[in-house]
Image (tube, rainbow, N blue to C red; front, side, top):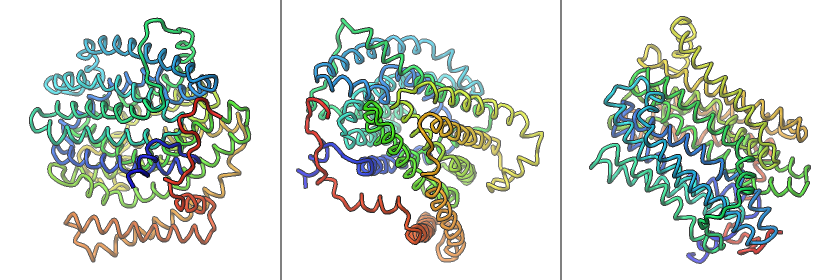
Amino acid sequence: MVKKLLQLFHQELGGLHRAAIVLAASSSVSAILGFVRDRLLAGTFGAGQSLDIYYTAFKIPDLLYAVSLSLVSVTVLIPFFLEKISVSPEKGRDFLNNIFSAFLLAMLFLIAVVFFAIPYLSDVIAPGFSDEARQQLIVLTRVLLLSPFLLGLANLLSSVVQSFNRFFVYALSAVFYNVGIIFGILFFLPKIGLLGITLGVILGAVMQVCVQMPSIVKLGFIPKFKLRMNFLEIWQTIKLSLPRTLGLSLNQIVFIFITATASFLASGSIAVFNLSFNLQSVPLTVVGVSYSVAAFPTLARLFVANQKEKFLNQTIIAMRQIIFWSIPVSILLIVLRAQIVRVIFGYGQFDWRDTRLTAASLALFAFSITSQALVVLFVRAFYAAGKTMKPVIVNVISSGFIVLGIFISMKLINVFSSFKNFLETGLRVKDMAGSEMLILPLIFSLGMIFNAAFLVKIFQKEFGEIWSSVKWTLFQVMAASILMGVVTYFSLSVLDKIFNIKTFAGIFFQGLVSGIFGLGVWYLALCSAKNKELREITASLKQRFWKTPIIASEPEELP
């Protein structure tokens, strides 16, 4: 068994479904650890000022990380790296060393500048905070400035392991990241407070780098610093990465704007937004990111080889699978939102108000999970094809929509009381203090739906029609998922009389059994419709990963 596990650790994974399933499985483990992390945070602090400060402390480091991707974006490095090693391994090593050297110098400079600018930047990202809260925010943010460097380095290493289809190693790194944070919560937090959690974040980032090193050593691509750099290669990377960097930086600026707006609202608004966002990010990562990451190297190879039809077909396959998984998950999140939030966060300082607001926010995010997953896929597809500016333009427009929409909505929400009443009544938070924050996830979701629709439209104009290949999947999955939602909803009402929903076990089993009933109906509905995606997934699950043929063990060059 140990030998099989070691083989799985170092082997390549062939095929979209098997690679995606490995990524999804490890993402699920990481998600469970993420639930443990957020449960500990919510139970310890509740949705209050402490968690507001903690989540706000990530905003500037996250923006710095987005800027760092001008050099270490996986979606850009993989095509370059594949091209270099197709000539010779030495060309690949030289390219890696150039990027690493430029990244190291650039990040040291940026971190030093931002370190001293934090007191001024804190006025921008949290203008509604008190002076005491802002001082605490400054300390935590300065510690977290180490994370963009470490995560950028992890990205550089993962571009190598993904190029050789070592998806298991790449996926495992995210698991260790959460392990580090949990360690900080359990052992550092009791001694030094919130600062201890940020030290756990840094520990997790270090572990994310270290877990990839054995494969990097085995492949023979350890990055080394050199003073004599090839600036032409560096500039080519930056030029191709720049649109992606701008797009991700825009995303972070949007989150900074959301955080700044929430800092003026009721205490805990930032925490509720981030806790519910983290919950909806689990299916987004397990489904959208897993299939997109698994598909990207293949998409890049196909486009470089001028196999445009296969490139289009591979994108369609990934799109169908994302639709297949994300729609039922979204409906389950909406129907079971209260049970999910109460089970994961409902203890300690996390009270009933926190639970209801977080559940309502989760439902609003859930409406756009499929759209968010498709955005991840089509951005990578455009990058595999070298069309870097198109998704950025779409992102600029959707980001502007979100910022303007939140600004206008916050000004008008108290004027148009009928809309506020409709929102509160529909989400069961009528007359609850702090419900204004629900505008934030609502506008965010609308912006992501717009983003996905625009990307799909542009992709079709560029590469060919895709809806005819996915509309039947969309119809089947949507119909089966709606039926699942109805069954799950009525099961909750029936099981409410069987389980004691005032206890953790009662809420857990009420939600679990209702979800199982719903999923059973969903599965039977798709079986009766002879759904193609269900057959493909079933076939992939029947294969044993340790018997997957090793495509190329430590290759000197790719086929």
